Length: 250
Length: 90
Image 1: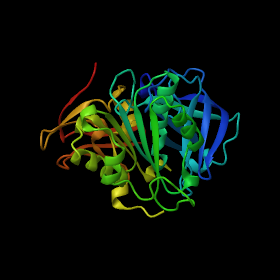
Image 2: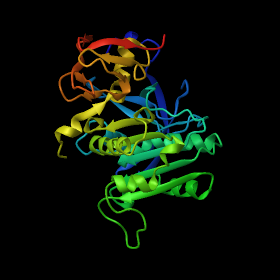
Image 3: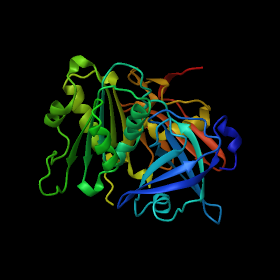
């Protein structure tokens, strides 16, 4: 990757790690000060590049977790033990470190806000990250867009942003959050206790007549199952945007 | 980690950075017309396989290979045979 000139208007720049937040045992958020950050839309990505002492470079793309209104840029990374990049970002990086970044990237899976259509967000695991940027954008912009989040995690300990989501849902400004836990549930759990299925979507989703904008993000099999159910339920395919997470994220 | 075949399939969002390098434009909102079935999809919607030595892009409707992209040795190699047209904002 010596020929950075071919990148046109998108160049690598250094982000200064300002804060680290352990979200779950395997997931951490990295909050950067990026002096020349051009701004982003909720749902966009940033590429991260690590360079080893011998010059070997590895690049990964991460969804941006922070709202466009936030002066700092946040990503949330799940540690994959056999990954090249994530074990460094979750576990090795310290406050004050400088990391190479470029972005923002993408434009298909974004929510700009500012329209009247309700929002249905469906997340699996770390697929919550771009959807959290949308929820934070909604909050920062004092939007009251009616929004429902259906969020599937393995266990209660694996729920990313749990406290923040609980607090935002408690405000009562039109955001509701439904959790499902697929593997283990704590005693007295009142949410769903299975994978997302059509019956669950029928309970949570907005009526078709309200013409919601729908974003689905998670592992490929989950995304395809959910999108398939939503189309079968009669939602307009053009209103369903999907983004698949895969093992290449390591 | 056990990797299943279905897990290897991603979508056009995963190559937004690579396409941005090549085209110097935001390309996930570009609309590509499949040379096989002539259906139109946003590049963000297409099927992407990244575990080969290069990237293989397939039509989500008919499975036709639309793009193959290899990057290495300071060069890009781009095969667009499977795309009839690509339309995007100037």
